[in-house]
Length: 314
Image (cartoon, rainbow, N blue to C red):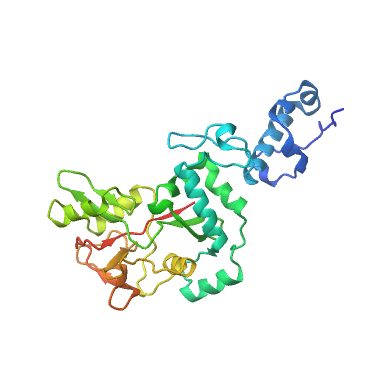
């Protein structure tokens, strides 16, 4: 016997998240709602509304049966996806997801523009989950066909989860301390050289030997933004704050650092479309002091040790 819900109030707006729902409805299938007896009780509008509500609730609870697919390898069916929302084993997205889960378990923070390293360390110790659950994080990653997860998987080292913003958006950066270096090989196009780049050292040496040139500030900035990532905000006060400070507090590593610890490294901040005579801020690693700080640099310089740490928000 189907309960008569024909008098259910059906709102005219699309804000289904504001509507109450019984947990048992999550077990309801579209086929069940299409049953003639159900349609007779609820009406076409009622059935359509409940389908939207159930779909929304499933998404929010990360129990959707199918994640929308695309050519980058996100699973297309429940056979590939698995009942727990897992990706195909060994795929870039699956490896990325596993790493992000480790990051979450290790502790994350709520990101603000003004937080310093000490404040973030205290916050991580007091609330290591930043008020989030892993299921809530997964909902963000898998939304819109796994768009955010794919972007994270394309970061250096498949990305690192640092924290969340106050609105729940995630803050994910390139993994590791080596900045992404941008260069244009002779006869080629501007290229991002990451720690994942095949024959990285040979490629870098080729540029050093004059077979191309490293990127200036504007080229790095444009390449980062054009790929759908962003840079940390400028710090005219020359202090480590916001994303830079959060990264150091959560990871326990310098924001940037050469692998061997003996070479200079720097990563640019978002200083806007500055003039050639302006200075831009960078986060510097000083191998002599074994320390990072915010310094200034000339935007026209094309340095082998200057690049970017790319951030993803969503």
